[in-house]
Image 1 (cartoon, rainbow, N blue to C red):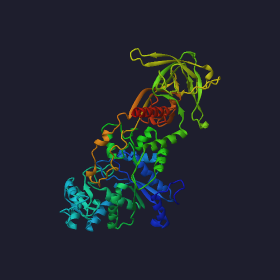
Image 2: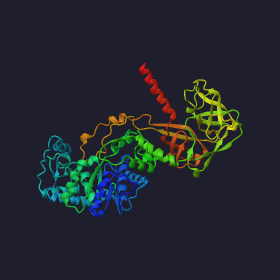
Image 3: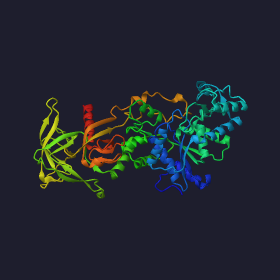
Image 4: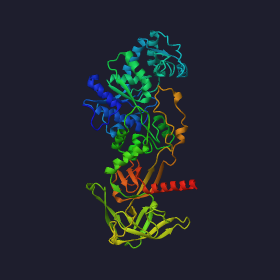
Length: 588
């Protein structure tokens, strides 16, 4: 079965279609998603997950493995493994019985390494790490052969067996492929394929004290699983000759095809687990699932949906050229999804007390509010209305700017689903002069938000009844970084890439946004939200989309995370006016 009609074409799909036409791989399609369990998955991984699992699902009999590249136990943790599995499931993908770990193949990989030694294609090198880097050369200068490169096959076999037996300390020896120290591709200059690490592994315990490197493990794991198309990001393009070299030298039964595509770069975001870990360890955020983090778990906690993320990944497409996607597109995708189905409710995040002087003190009305303006099947909820209400502080101005159609002294405004009210008096703080209470009158004939005499009121604001509303903590999240490009590296840095290219962390740490989180502890929400469950999502009318926090919210303490704002027409007007004023000043 070829790709579905809804799946956009791209160069990878085109390659696979041509392979199927030629009956290559016996018309099989097998992919894999191979994360390292050394951190949580981020948005860039979501693109790879959707691509690998999606490609497999589009073809009859297509399969996709979830394989953990657990070859560096000093940085890995079972917490990361479980988080990755949870994220993949939440995104809507199922690996079935195809869960694998590189550690499942440790014995086979060791035997492959022995085969290379016996073919005189690998040798034990006793240079230190700094010396290996020095001997490697540069992009302009060839490398220099190790003095241990001429060791006999017998000596190399003996040393490698003793390395496995634990006779040597970390760093005493490594096993290197014997390729070409003069190759223009640095990856082909006798790369390290095994190193000594006396570290307990979270799956194999202390059985092993030597661990294979990524480039050696990756291609052979693909081969063992009979992967047909090994989809990698562009930073592995220079590694493809090494990928093929190992498979060619070992004459394996299955030789997968590595295909590289452009990774996801997102504005105002970093896509490096190493840097994200630094942010977590420095206490900049509360953890990997902090709603400001670009991790899948962070986005989930913030209120993003798997449908929105999958839609985003489909929209950005798959290409060969590196580019940066505007984060506004991701925000558009979540707005588009949430707008279709989230219930509408009212929440006042910065309350200002309003007393309706001519409303009976003992009267409480129940007004109807639709849960969705375009979906009558969602029904309505009851909105208690009483003499004392809260409105949004930003919806009141003592002095009205031009085009401000909300509540000001002497002007009428419409309360959503309720009545017209007019501001008639103010109560101010004696020390600061700030307005702490607004007194209004209401028109009893305007129930439902319309007046029988036909007079027009331009402004409509939301509200909650003071006596019936629920106290809530509102967390307003903004972008974690102030700069569009916060000094990110081109992807997670694999062990095979020289450490010399890792830039200083000062660039991205300096661009952190100190205002990325604002916590409002005295907000009020309508009583309908008393039954709100963790991860429930709502549109707070006129404010934005919010999600019940999955970790901190309880029945006694409601906590909402802002997922994304609504378009703010007033903010746009202010911005335009500021630009006009700035232009006039410049002109004068």
